[in-house]
Image 1: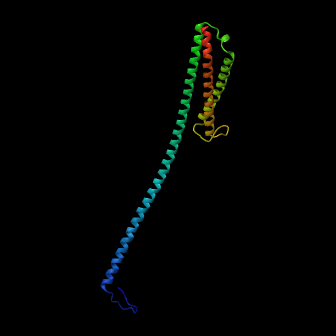
Image 2 (image 1 turned 60 degrees about the vertical axis):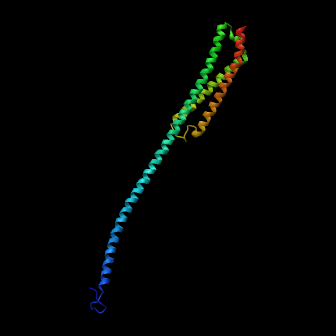
Image 3 (image 1 turned 90 degrees about the horizontal axis):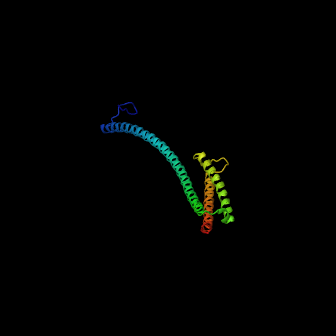
Length: 197
């Protein structure tokens, strides 16, 4: 009950008392809603943190998978290059064998008839090709041994530089094989000519 400043009961209108009551009920309801909203907000924040953590894990997994895919593609490319080189070498050796067989069938001693300078050039090219093959195989073993660490190598080079070195070796090897094949083609008419004699 409200009292006036001199201690006597004050005559408060019923409408004001009722309005005050309504305001208190409203205030209590708003406090309750605020508590529920804060709880929902905390749950949402926890969910957002969980989703961000999951997203980070998925990004890391994706990056790792991409790196593994890239390494696998590099290994496939190296193997395909080896197969192509082997096929070219087989073709060259088959042509050389066919020439030798033709020479044997004709019964002519090829060593005395073939241009010795060209034979010597072919032998030098074969030796050089063998050295390049050995170097290329060593570089490929080095890269495979590092197993996907793109920044480490025994000599301090980065993987990119090793890959470039291998590609240069392969290009030189292909060039040498082409030179050997061209030299063989130059000698083939001589062999054929001497076989016909």
